[in-house]
Amino acid sequence: MSRRRWLSAAVLAVILCGALADLVRPAPAQAHDATTKAHVEVSGAGAKVRAVLDLEYDLLMKSAWLYAEAYEAKGRAEQLRQLKINRDAVIRYVTDRFQVAYKDKPCTPTMAGDSDVRPRGKAAFAVLTLDYACGAGEGTYAISSALFPDSETFVHSTETLLRYRLDGVNGSAVLVAESPTVRVGEHSATNQIGEFFLLGAEHLLFGLDHVLFLLALLIGARRLRDVVLTATAFTVAHSITFLLAAMGTVAVPGEIVEPIIAASIVVVAVANLLGREEDRLGRLRLPIVFAFGLVHGLGFAGALDIDESGSWELLLSLLSFNVGIEATQLVLIAVLFPLLTLLRRTSAARWAVLALSVPIVAVSVYWFFERIPLPL
Image (cartoon, rainbow, N blue to C red; front, side, top):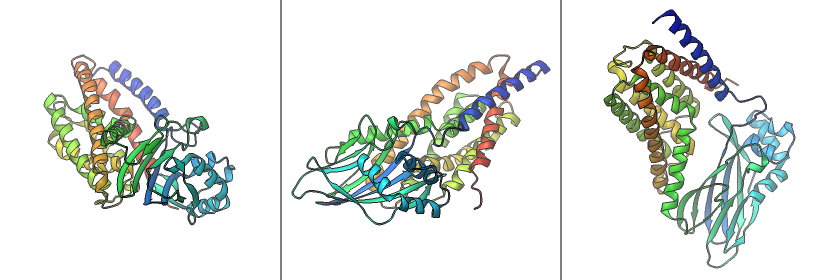
């Protein structure tokens, strides 16, 4: 490669590094990611219903219009103290935006016990338990969520991942602003499949780490056969751990999974820079992809955060979520691989690998160290 092309590649790599850094590093004024997910479990029968809500702690405290001392609190002990001090404001915010109705009449909520705080990924989530008193007689339940709406401007496109067990009916749903209510017993399997399919597609498409891993694999795959084998190995591997982790059979903390996912991107991208031209991962391609696919499957499961064993009633949702991931992966491959193939046929092929791989390495190394939990 000529000196001029090396220089051009280096300049392009620096530009791409800066662009990707802006994507992975939040702006100073942002306290949260662009979106958030509320996790809710509702159970009960007749007039007695209990809802357990997991809500991002600092977002909850900010949305309840509390002072910075509350939403900037660090450490579980201080966050618990702030939840206790601001109990009334928190309950008022949540009960105004999350409701259970029976026979089209709102059930009356009361707080059950004290709030709790637990980690989900790298964020702290407040755990609130509400008991709802509903009317007597036979009827159907309706569950509605308007938590963290766009109008509050703190986040956008909030999704409430709901699981319910009411009067012997088990199910799950994704509540969004366009469809904020589910009626128990009227929520068809078709709707459930569609909701979790879109959720899986969204998780892959907007999960930049998974996209970069896929891009790094495609950069190193020169033939259609390589792409088919690589995609198959990755699909089989992450499907295995995704289902096992989501069903509670395997449990690995996110503090371990997330840095390894970042490291997997580094390994594949560096292999593209240092490996042989004809096969940049060499004979280790499939074992490496399969091993890292197992880790990425744990990351996919973390998006749903379903970690209780015996949740077989959610199998349809889990499979739909996984199919959404696969369909989106195939679309990305169909778009990216032909473009990379055309690029390889030009005189810019060698420096293009450098220009694409260096930013991926840089961002992934940043992610690796950023995701390692600091000792308290």
